[in-house]
Length: 332
Image 1: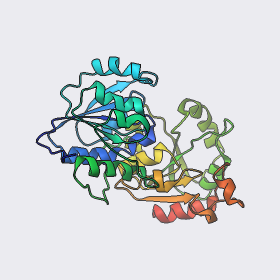
Image 2: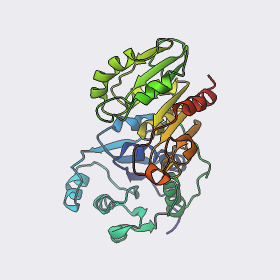
Image 3: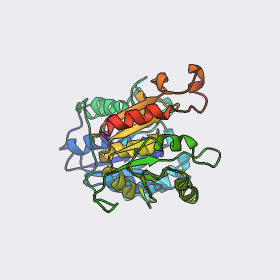
């Protein structure tokens, strides 16, 4: 394929993943596209759920929303693309492994249709590469950019969100703790073990999942916490409000997932406790903030005697060690 140049690329359509964490991890790729094609119209085909997270991007794009069950088979492709109001597409990029998603480029009549060459997608893509094995997902996307856009982005790329306004009033610095996920409909007691190590801190408690259920549990949970800290129960309407809170924190402590990626993107120091994901594939290392990892890749910090069980069962963390890392990392 000839290099895709700025002069001949005026309209770009990109199919984004459904999972929120995966979507946030496409941001380095989207930054690279925006910088290489500064005059092109960008169209993101994106799930309606959590679409507001795209408003954190510091550049303009058009969003074309779909519901979870709207694009499931190739029979759904034509009605969606016919009503999408995306015209004269020069370049279509699918960032998923879905054959149906790849067909969207055909439905849009894109001149160039780029993606990974898994399975049947080779039939509908004009330019494809095998998905790299064992790489970080961001490196996968950047390899796609390098091979098929014809330009090599900075391998040490570290991107960040647009500037965000403060949402929590006052000048007292705070630590954010994500209490999700719920297990057995309760907030884990190990969070109490961790918080008991802090003294004289303002601690913002929130939930990235099950927020409605969590709002029924957090007040009672706060009553069990030591009175030597000041606690804030933070609820939010969307990813922008959550990002605004995280951006002004000393740092976030969270289990792995979308909240860690979001925090890293908005510039918050992020301490992530990994239970069974591989941080070398999904860790938010390509954002501007500093990220620290504890868990499966550092077994000495996890209360488990069987390394094989770490990947299969719920692991519990040594919260004294977690506090020590947070104290050092956040410079408390």
